[in-house]
Image 1 (cartoon, rainbow, N blue to C red):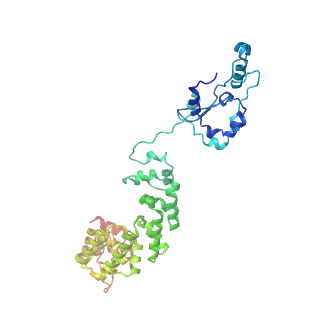
Image 2: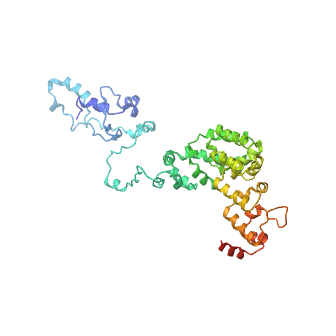
Image 3: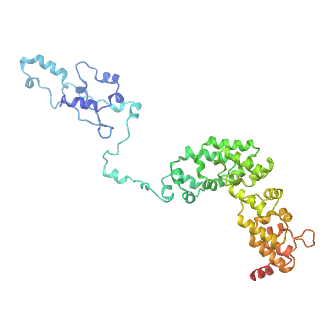
Length: 415
């Protein structure tokens, strides 16, 4: 049955003819004069209006019976019959029907343009039973654990030793990590850190503290390393600084330069001593300067140390710059006023400010109980502050107190 005049333009518009069959192919198959494309096709592509993908298998257009010229036309209309036969489909008896093989005619380039199957394409019940749907991502969550099974990036970070339970406590951290692509955004940073000297076993702890390094531009990170190298920091120095202060490379060159200038000017240190100071305590470059300024006032105004004495102590024990103010004053008060140790001896052994005050008290009181609390280097049986606070209990009892550990423990029970 031939298509009606209203169906022809609709059918032609539904076929992406240019992407499937070239004009040359049409002429090679359907180029016989007197025959139209519509009457010649025995199998045609149909384009779904819902999904846009091709389906093959339209009904073959052909006559249902042999053309009977005696029953269909009058004797007086022989010319009209000849004209009609030239435009109508050939009869079954005249010529066997040829179905063009579109699978062989279409090139691979043409098939590349065919879009994937539509989700609206009907499927059989057997196929539907075999479909296993992944559980949907939660729209929101208080923990990254809900997303690990769905995110390759989070899975690989966990394998590196990153503690997601600590990262998720920071606002915005989860959104940052879930937007990252491991190969594109993370892998290059990992290679940079390894080139810098951070070992595989240290990457987990480093990234747990500074996961935001993934949002930094790689060129900026390289520029900051180059700046430190220009200030005569060796590669091992930079590796040590970055390991101890993971946020170091997150600061701009301008800020790093200002911090180095501050300590050199405020403490009146030369370049080498300033460099050694920040290598030993690199968080001086990343932390707040307020505790540093406050402690400098405490040493000078409240504890009575001179400027050169402060310089000596902080170059020996850099943590004195960031120590708790209350702990500093309580330690100094006990050592200076109770143990009667003058400033110049304290300057020689600043480790006392880094020790636990209760341990200093226990050992001093035990020595005083034994009559051995003598801290003047000009007298006999001198006991240095260094040994008092640094050696373990066994050595303290045996070499300094000249007593047993059991005696020391019994004495502590009386306090």
